[in-house]
Length: 365
Image 1 (cartoon, rainbow, N blue to C red):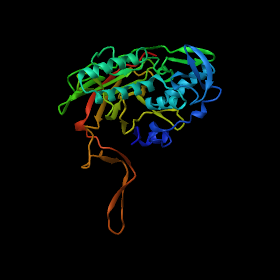
Image 2 (tube, helix red, strand yellow):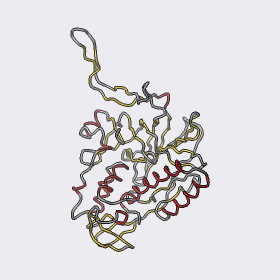
Image 3 (cartoon, rainbow, N blue to C red):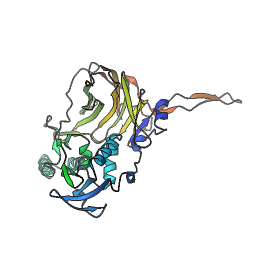
Image 4 (tube, rainbow, N blue to C red):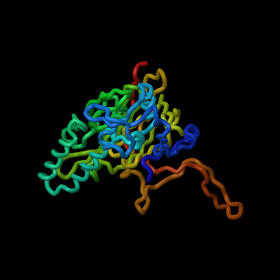
């Protein structure tokens, strides 16, 4: 199954040139390579040589931009991609970014959790694990029980560009990314249905898992969605659960929804997709989904949320689907009709959705 499937309304399908599954679109890195963007080895703050994939230890390789303009152009291109696309795009250029390292570290933590045979062994392994990533990845600075390590953030795009030493190159200068540890904790509330902009839930059948959500306005006046699952591990610590799928429907006012077009460009639409589906995002969903209308004073409405635990399933355990739209065509001899056209989406019942009421105030322009 693809990492992220987007089932678009007809207007969005036209705008995106039928790129229903744009989230898994493969971008052609050759279009930015060459003189504008290359890779170099950087050791102890010094540029050693230009290199190609396989010539140097990937840990020491950094992206190199010929000019400030080339760097800004690269950032703009990344802005049109999802989190997963950004990571893969830079990785395909031969650079292990901080965000890529975040995924690698989380995979290591999952292995530690499953292989440790005692509390003592786990916590010894965990201390060694923290030492390994000290100064590179950071713990949640609010929730001390959360064992997940995160890439630092600041100008968030830099975390997708900078290598483990938090550097990249512009011209002949090594640039240190302006990054700082950032909290991943969502403030917890207790009354489902009355939340404004964020919330969390614990399901009775799986009390060790907590589902958390936040919709917020970024410093760029865009709407960011953050939705993840925190699980309690057997030794008492907790971490992000990498094994959940997420389904989201929006009903918001005063919003342009953002999509990725055929060539990686940002496409705006006043209509959202019928449903947004995220498969196993390791740290949950953390994406830009839209932006307020110009001069709008408030973004209001609600968001409905499901996981793989609350979406409908067939008898064989597979995710149930339904067809939206389309029309009936009838056989002229038997008068038997069949539904033609329409869009097939996962079946998510409103009665099983988590609802978040939204009232966001855009930044002053």
